[in-house]
Image 1: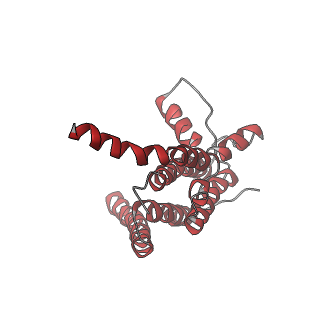
Image 2: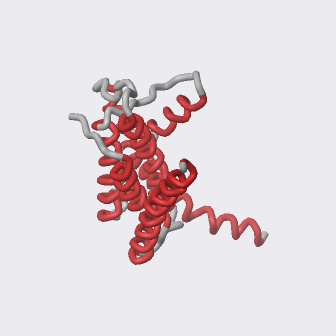
Image 3: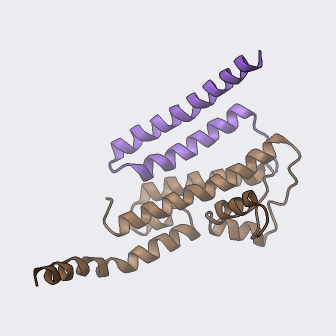
Amino acid sequence: MTITLNHFSAAAVFALFASIVFGITHRETTREMVRYGLYCFAMFLGGALLAGWAMWILRR
Amino acid sequence: MADSTTQKTKAAPAESVSLMAVVAPAVGWLIPGAGHIIQKRWIRGALLFVSILTLFLLGLAMQGRIYKANGGDILDILGFVGNVGAGGLYIVTLAMDWGQGAIAFATADYGTKFMIVAGLLNFISIADAYHIAIGKKQ
């Protein structure tokens, strides 16, 4: 079985699972874990989008 | 005198948790999340297991390459270190001779990175299981 993901979906999948692990391992309480996981997910995806736009601007 | 008494008091709890402090990281390395599960952190363990397993399997399904022990290029050595972190998943993958795909397209390279990251995330998970075992974390 071969799965082909485009750039964005690969980044989203990566961000999701890495954020879950970061949230669980870097915080103490459940509430803090959820908040930090969401923060990491937003930073991962936001960073990818920003980097994408930056490269698009540089290319022009 | 007071110093030796204090040292004895500090040493006692460390000895009582030493077994779990060894077993939890070892089991957590072999099966991602199991280090948390044997310490009754069921949900955390299950989430870690699902996250790391899914990332690793997606990497395999994307035709990612697995690194074997090598003494060559530094990036190959680091790739091996990352892969080894996945523990049992890495052992099974090697035993079944999976992860031998040639990197012919971009998603295969993503797959290789997914598997390395799964191993690195498992290292973090192992450290967390250890911190729980020694009482540094709830």
